[in-house]
Image: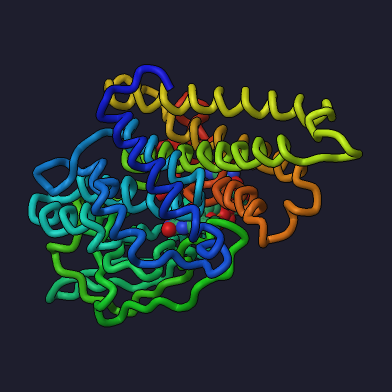
Length: 386
Ligand SMILES: Cc1cc2nc3c(=O)[nH]c(=O)nc-3n(C[C@H](O)[C@H](O)[C@H](O)COP(=O)(O)OP(=O)(O)OC[C@H]3O[C@@H](n4cnc5c(N)ncnc54)[C@H](O)[C@@H]3O)c2cc1C
């Protein structure tokens, strides 16, 4: 890719080496067992990946969104499932704390997040729908001695996290709001209910969690009690770009494996490359990958220059995740029966690409966010949901 500075290229190369030498050998196991060994996240801390989006004063290296996406793209070539987890740890959670937290909260949470000692989770989705926040039931109430949290969330990724950033309904002086509170795994009344068996993005425990009268101190309310829940705000827009980077890496990873495969595969006594549907399709997929790369990195550049006026995170997430599913499905087809067998490690790319069309808001939700930004109204228009 053109236009990268030396630091960006260096981080990309470190990530590529880590992905090839350390992650690829266990990538199939991550998918099959639905678990990532603990050392992997710690190693990402040692290599500086987790602190990429965290300011230096809080233990990070503040290398920016382009670098974060380059790292995620490289890692997704080996394990799109783990890259999805890393995106939450590297961008969504620390950025939510950075944007909303006070000084004490940033000092408490960010350095340990940068080193990989404090794994964080972000929990918004409820049975009534992820974005349907007006119908969310998880509620923070004041009880004279402090606050209490009660409710039930679904599909929380990083079920084994130490710290949970929990979006909830709030109220203050008779006013209703939507905020974010910090819950620790050991807090009394916090319960991880079960882990789901998933189609894709299997590198982590995902499942329902519950809060039964969990005591929350004022220090654990992130930002403004009435508007601390960022929902699809700035932290989410950069996080969406992280997920788009993982989908870009996902299709590139399978593209590279397929290139090797079709070059050595013989059919009817001749090279498989003789079949024009194969070579035509590879050329088309190559072009789609390059178009996605251009969209993603022009968007990260806009973000870094402070010139982003439309929700480009949503545009990248919707377009690149959809394209990744289309392309990985077509690439899988070229492997014939071998692509369907789990032992080859090929079909996990397509399953991960499919899961990412839903996780962190569906493609349709992203289109709604974009439509609202284009002044077309809809469920994401200000004040439409609470
Ligand atoms: C692998 C995985 C990991 C996840 N991890 C987390 C996590 O860590 N934390 C967390 O909070 N959530 C997590 N989720 C939940 C995820 O964010 C939601 O599943 C997703 O946003 C969709 O919400 P929903 O399931 O409530 O679907 P629904 O809201 O019930 O959607 C149903 C249908 O309606 C459409 N729809 C809904 N709203 C709109 C709209 N505004 N405009 C247009 N169409 C719409 C959807 O596209 C979909 O087709 C995860 C999900 C998956 C699959």
